[in-house]
Length: 222
Image (cartoon, rainbow, N blue to C red; front, side):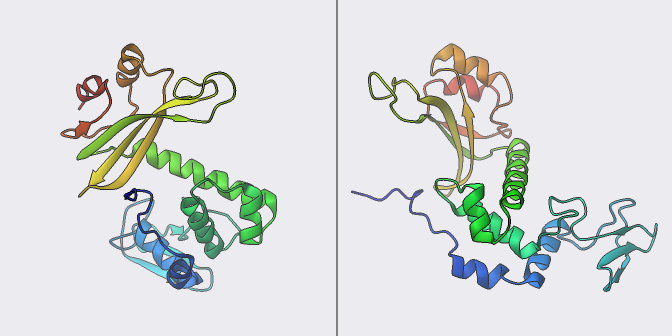
């Protein structure tokens, strides 16, 4: 039986993660590159010329004198948890196939349960915001699926306890890049048409969507 290329796609091993993000300096460098890819930008006046206070670890804009830290305005702001712990939490949360509980996360990170719970929910909220803002583009494959198993009665697609949802996957060169999942009331033409009139997929103009019986309703929005 042929292997599913999505299921067996190569990920980052824990060894590779530790080698790349195991130190404080490497985590700060990654955050700096993500926040200011073209160099420091003042959050107040957008100026670029600045000085840096090593002792207080603060950037000061040379134009308006505003001081800011690398973590200010991010989910790491005012957190006493080291960046290395945050980055490890990101790795564990995103690499887990079947989710990871806050209790298990606390054990893996070596922090209290309440800290692990807060970290997990902040990361999930950030992932949700990113998911809402991103527009799927290019080749997008849409299909229906169910979540959950049989509770009682007849097994299969119509079994009780199953939650129907739509899955849209942006692919590039045949490989998955981004995915969006949306719950629906049922898999019928009217339900999907109603759903398609909203903004569930955020498909970018010019996207090419394939799959699912009610695809035409979605394509009208592209």
